[in-house]
Length: 393
Image (cartoon, rainbow, N blue to C red; front, side, top):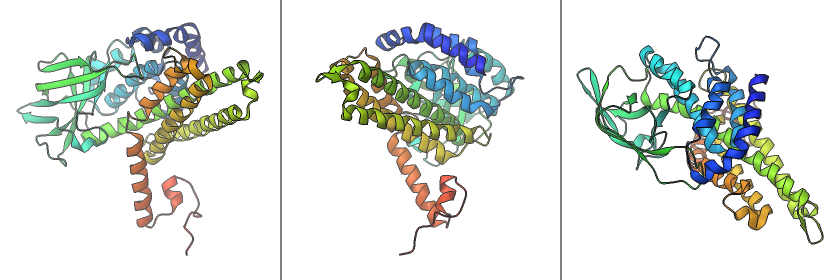
């Protein structure tokens, strides 16, 4: 994979760095970057030579996503989305859907939306109101998905719906919908402050008729959560890229800017900011690598470690890109500056793929319940040994 990374670095150096400010300013879909990455093979990282699904290279996914997101998180997300949908299709979809959508997606000729979120169902996924009702050999879908990547321009969508009933505990299905079907409406959503360039919007389903065979062979909620585990590893990698960008820009600024008769980097307050930033990057990357290694085993990964990685990296990215803006002063407040873009993108990572608050809540709940079941803290943390019992008071 050394050759792939070298070719990716060449794409970044020769094209992406120059294109990134324009992508952010115009919020136009960087299809050129997405297709250039596809030509290198970045979207194929989870495939074996024979085209079968192979998650062993998930750690390489982290490396590529970090490198791209350091300069353009929108580009990193447009690329990663192709891996997410093809992962789900290869793992769970019937062969006719694999044949129709996988190769076009890997070539960045077709784009698939991942439809979970609704107006009143964000992190609370069980609150979705989209329903797929059985009607003969078809499913009839009605509902509205919001804040969905590739909703405005995707050729297909993997949509989470409740089956026959909108009750909170209803059975769920993940339906693959051709967006050219009657009853599908695709709309652009409001512009975000960050992640500018990733198409995002609304997918309306008004009695859309889909063959009953066009579903993933898994409980809908479980399958989409499996996909979210992969998406959260990518999100952690984006945050690592933002942190690395913030550190790189801050060191360069501190080494060249003068204030009070000395180089800015000689001031203890600036050194402290940069020191914490460097430590945060190393910790974030180590946790993300651990999450990726767990997913690479092929069993869906360690959900707790993946959640920790997404939570820690996104919060660290927001904190330290904010510090990078501070180090740059008024120049950091200019919307077109690199650190300003990093800071705006960092905020997005705290919200998509589960807000920081929902990850905190999930992890805290699981830790307490693990203790109530009599499990040692090492088990919850995924570490060996039996040294984590709380001392008796």
